[in-house]
Length: 234
Image (tube, rainbow, N blue to C red; front, side, top):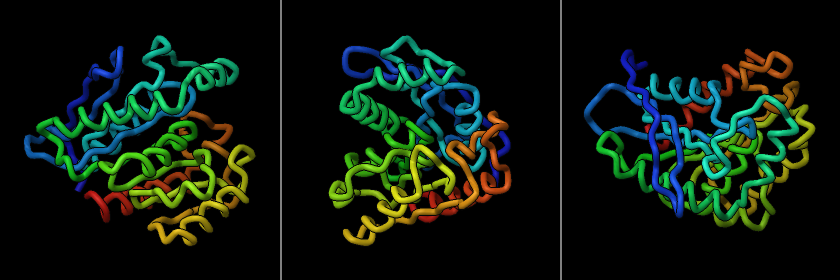
């Protein structure tokens, strides 16, 4: 049942040599519950991602959206050229280390059940969500939306069930890559599913971008995401 009252706040999380800004949305309840890490697109921690976090909170999750650009000045942009430069300025290993620190912080919060943690990410964030599913055993469910697929052999290290959301018309993560992921999950016997929407472009879930947003498929992807998370950490 959706939650009526939410608490939202900006938080600062200690990371190696710095602090990570993050947006937190959660039900106004005292008892510990499941939590989701929401990882942003290359645009930065913008209002769209804050809205997604609040959607999860209304469904009963504590949703934490960390700013992966905290070491780069907390940048937010609508310009693709600047976004590409920001993304290129990240070092994957450092981001994973930072996300591990975020996970530890989240586990320690009194409103979080530490054994019910999931991650959802979009585009660049989907890439890191998939990485977390292979590197962080605290993560019990992962939903990457159109993130980069790692080398097939690395899929053997997945420690969390996976729901990968893909747009069949994506020119960044092309169809054969999504198919390779599905084949890799099967090859290594890892629990996971690839859901592809044949007529959708990259970033079709982002309702602030009318050029790519596909409302019907986005609604279906949202319901699938909620059902998947409920089955593993709900």
